[in-house]
View 1 (tube, rainbow, N blue to C red):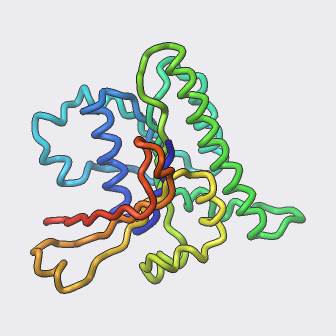
View 2 (view 1 turned 60 degrees about the horizontal axis):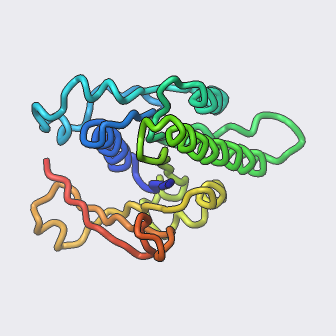
Amino acid sequence: CSCLVVGQHRISRPLLLLAAVTAALEMGIRVSFFTPTQIQSLPVFLQKSGPSLSPESLKRITFSYPRTLEELLQQVAGLHESPIPPSLIIVDRLEDFLSGSAGSGHVGLHSAERLSAAHLSALLCDTSAFLTRVLQQKGSSSFPCCLIASFLSKEDSQLDSRDSSTSDPILDVVDRYFQVRCTLDQDRSYEAAAASAQEAWHLYLSGGDPACDDRPSVGQEWKLLVYA
C-alpha cells in the first residue's frame, strides 16, 4: 500500500507526523521517517495527546535526515538490513530531494530530474514490497510495509491550487508509482470561516481499486478543520 500526499507542507507534514505517531502508538509498529529538515517538535495537537503519547511509543519511530538524493537512496536501501524492519516508511518533502538532482551530463535538466524521480519512487516501492515479505516470513507483523510520501509541486507552491499540480512533470512521474493520491486543497469559503476553525482543508483521495476493501475507491473526500 502506498499513498502520495500532494499539497502545502504546513498541513502535509503534520499529517505525516500524525500517521507516524498513530502507527507507533495505536498499532505498535515501527516507522522510518525521512525528511530533509530537522523536526524540532511535534505539532501542538499531538503534544496535547497527554499521557497516551509516551516516550516508549515514540521510540518506535526512527527519524532520519538525509541531505541529498544520494543519501536518501542509500538510507532507504539500507532498510533491507534492518534487524527489525519498519512497517511504515514515510518520506517528507520528496521534491526537495529531486530538485537539483540532475547533475551534469548529456541528459537535459528536466529529463534527468524525471529519471531521478522514477529511480527514487521505484526504490521506495520495491523496498516496501520487499520488507512486506520479510515481515511476513518473520511473522513479526501482520501488517504490510506501507509507504507514504509528500510532494509539493512548483505550481502548488506558488498558486496553492489543487488543479495546477497535474501540470508538474516530476509529479506526473512520481504519481505513477503510488497506488493512492491524497490531494490537499485549502477551503477558503464562507462556510469554512463560519466553522470558527483556524484553517479548513479538503482531502481528496484518488486512485486505488474500488473492488478491494482495503484500498480507498476513486473520489473519496474528507474535510479537515484545524483549530488553534
